[in-house]
Image (cartoon, rainbow, N blue to C red; front, side):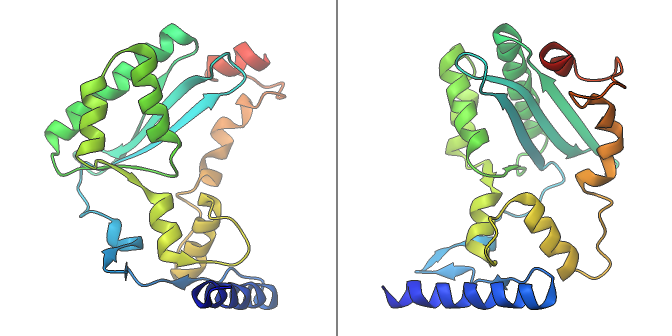
Length: 221
């Protein structure tokens, strides 16, 4: 076993032991520059008021897979948070949602040239390229995002920036680390705070309302 690999395992084992003894997550912040190239937090660009936070949801049970939700979280001119969903409940609507999402992003980047689109793991980038080829549309826009480095994978940033115990680096784990590491942090900004709004939309709920997403009613109603 290489010495560097052994060192990583020893550090990770120590974090696991600390977590078991204290009942709280423990982590180490890794050096931002390794091997002469920026890694971890050094990958993050300068923040911009036009930054967007992007998540997609897909249905693998549909033939060929269906990307049914493009979600963008951003801030308006007053600094208030704004969530913009683009829904596609079938293949035709998927194309329209993809085009509307790309138009939204293009307009936002025109208004804020230094803005970036943050996502977690490679799914979003892979899906955008797949949709570009599948529907034969928005090739130039997607290519520009890739060439200009506008898509920032936060999973890659976190994986290179932090060493944690034996748990995978899921967003919930990172949130838990943040809540323990930053004094005064709360769950107010997390999905838990907003869960009651979506509870009636659960597939097995008898309290489904018209405000629920129609995709749930279509698939589980």
